[in-house]
Image (cartoon, helix red, strand yellow):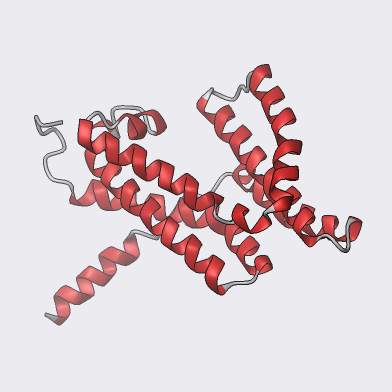
Length: 206
């Protein structure tokens, strides 16, 4: 029994070893969040809600732009750039009125992904996973990856809501700023788990 536990621990540790470095540009939105907030406090010393809203909205806008650029092969259309330019000030004004609601935005985003992955499992198309990770390497594992990502995003909702309840605003911002690194590590570990444990990747039911 002791030997089996030791082997299980070694396998678990292997999931988190030699994880590739996250791209530097993926952390740019987090840098914006952590830099703009204190700068905003200096500019508007009596308006912490406005400083937080500005930092958060700029962070989200940059994350959206980077994701759109990645999905389009490094190009962002002029129309989408103009949409970001026009919507960012409006989002700042709306968010400043209810800044606490902005902390729940990551939970809403994760809930959206949960719905997408759940629908993919029901129709067995696995379109979301196939669009994010195209190629022959991932295609045989589309179902298991969809299940894993659904569970991961459910946990993100729980984690975010817990952090909102127990941490200060500044503490939550640090958590959210480093969440891309946590996501990178967990997704890598989940993919390795799926690849190692999924038998017969070429089953007909796919």
